[in-house]
Image 1 (cartoon, one colour):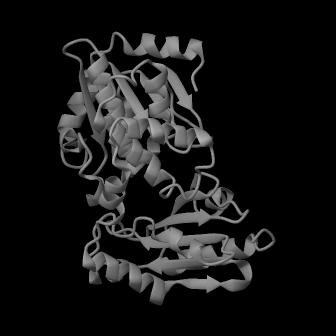
Image 2 (cartoon, one colour):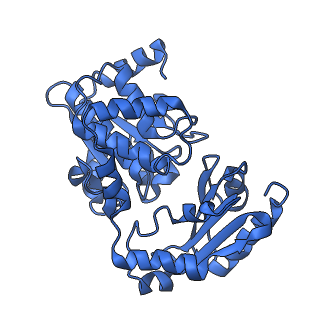
Length: 342
């Protein structure tokens, strides 16, 4: 993945660094956490004695990811701003993983922007826009976790890779491909999975930890959305659903309860587009948008054009600063605008 010149540049950047901060985007998913935790572990075991590496995240990960090795030592900005600021003040390198713009860290954005330490970017999203000393950007890769594996392997770190690093990388790749149901046609991905399993990864156990970890109230919420809230536009091979704060409160919503639900409508034969519109639980007039696509239609352009967002060809997201009713009208407008491709 990296050229010889890039490998040498990366080595020269990492070698002298003793106080490193590794960070990812707000509402970290499996890929953000998996890549960050594995990269931090690698940096610790390959650095000089006394090297300090801390993973800093804007807010907590969902409950179904908190089993990941190293998560208990992660520092959350929302919980301890002063500690995060101290870590950034002392840092001689900040590694930005799985995000392409500082704005994706939201409440942590200003602290990162004002940090004087050089930044290293490792990411697979389109259009990176962060000032860095080195930017490793590969949008064609399935996940940042896949990139981390490739970098560690190229740096000669595979032989000493720990079981926990392998578990975290596997979890990141698995979740960012929907358990290998999308964005995973490159045979190299399965070569990597094989190499990770050689390190003892129990893929079935990780699957259960992530996907078989719902509370009963979460299962009822997901069922409610499918039964009562899903709107199916059969002629245009599209579907969307809305969800209000009141509805989430009714089912005792916790972060992660709706993870992956936007993918479910794509199980319908011929479906090309699924959109989730969910009111933010903390801010009024903010609707969080997720889009997924299949069968030859790609949703990333729609996310940019109508939802102030972006992402990958078939997995994108955005935000709307309006009521849920207005957001529903925008979604319908977007679907109609793309009816020729749907």
